[in-house]
View 1 (cartoon, rainbow, N blue to C red):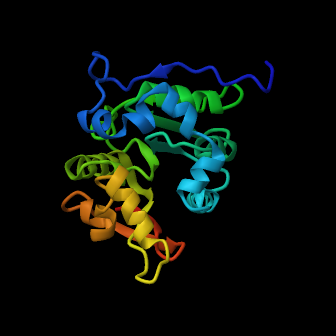
View 2 (cartoon, rainbow, N blue to C red):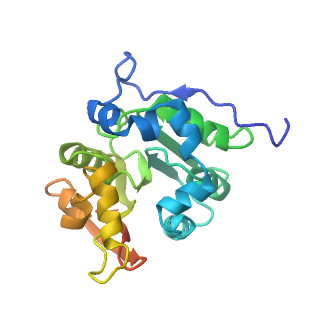
Length: 244
């Protein structure tokens, strides 16, 4: 097998409804230009552009994810929603020989895009078409779950459902790692620029400034915070919790 040949993997589904997944209404209405249209995927998934959107912090935030995982990554890992850039390929390079990585997304076009970025056949990785708010997999299936800039793109009810599902499928003692926007320090020179971006393109993102991520965790969730860190003047955050 040519080592430069893209990974050939089928898009699979968790056991559940056999009907094709419909694109959520809010996603089609608000984010079609960013995630749904194939031309949008081609346009946005470039390292320089992604780094510009995150104001030069993309690599730093991916590194922040990897800091929380063992090296090599062991056990079963769930990445909830695809992400533009090299997050998933970097996770692939850190996977242990007996470990696994499931990447889920409700959009098939996003999974196909991830597939093109992964190299070499790799039976440790599954690409799964599934809605983050309704994971058709058993309770306590994973050692860790990751959300990388997903909660701010969800309406509040969907955000709560997705986080509840993350808690459900992670084993006791397992991690949930969240990287997201955060309310920056009052003096931040780009605070009002970021606010304008939210108002124009990200209608749910201001929730990340008004509330803590933990405010959206399922009621009665039993967990401990193992790491809470902000970056770039507080504009970004990492929250790591362990499910009890």
